[in-house]
Amino acid sequence: MIRSRAMPLAELMGVTFTEAAKERVVATMVVRDDLCTLGHTIHGGAVMAFADSVGAAATVINLPPEAKGTTTIESKTNFVRGVKAGGTVTATATPVHIGRRTQVWQTRLEDADGKLVAVVTQTQMVL
Image 1 (cartoon, helix red, strand yellow):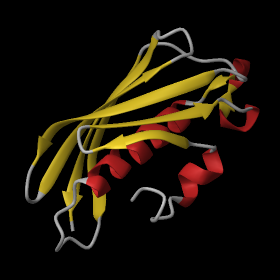
Image 2 (tube, rainbow, N blue to C red; image 1 turned 135 degrees about the vertical axis):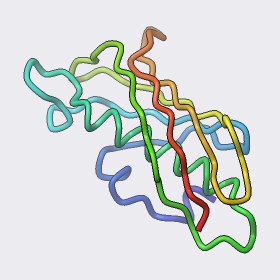
Image 3 (cartoon, one colour; image 1 turned 180 degrees about the horizontal axis):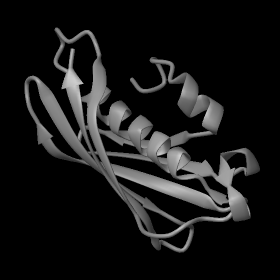
Image 4 (cartoon, helix red, strand yellow; image 1 turned 120 degrees about the vertical axis):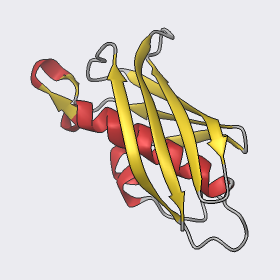
């Protein structure tokens, strides 16, 4: 289902979905130079966009049949550490709440060593 709906920004950033189930969506992204800030470290906006894409994909999998789509209505990011260019980040989204009108997802981003990079909690509106 994720592959049937284009996510142009995720594609542009190089996001690769590796697992997709109703209770868990996992994706990876290589940190390229164009996703970095000073010091060749991943930009906070890239972290947030990556997590938002994974949480949105998780919502799509859980949409009721009558829904027309989803949109993010709130997002909060706790940054823990950076990742240098050339590193890989893995994002794992799990549900906090799946309701009729909203869904809340928590996405943990980790580096290749399994160290926490960020935690993002987002609320998606069901359209």
